[in-house]
Length: 100
Image 1: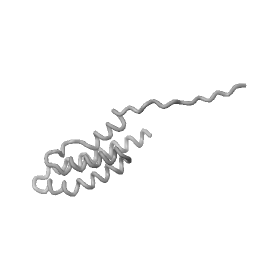
Image 2: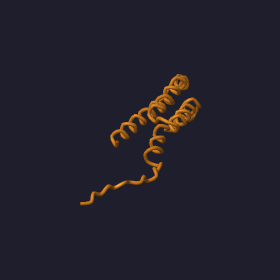
Image 3: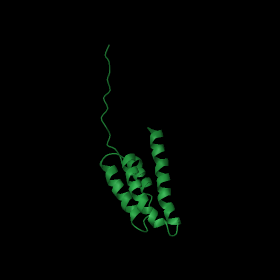
Image 4: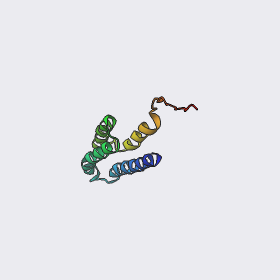
């Protein structure tokens, strides 16, 4: 499971860097965001399935499409929310004991 988490983290960093790279391209950059925003939203929903993935994909789409917000690392923030900050409630464990 830890390896899976690390893969998601590396992919998220790569997607964040790709989204931020469009800021460095003077004239074409904003137009590349029009292509990048739907792709990033699709990748976000694939990386994080379920309701939180859908919400995150909407947020990443808006973040990429709005001017001046490309510097927000949405994929990295979603990884931190999912695997670091969000605490799962403790699950009850059943311990079976055999009697002799």
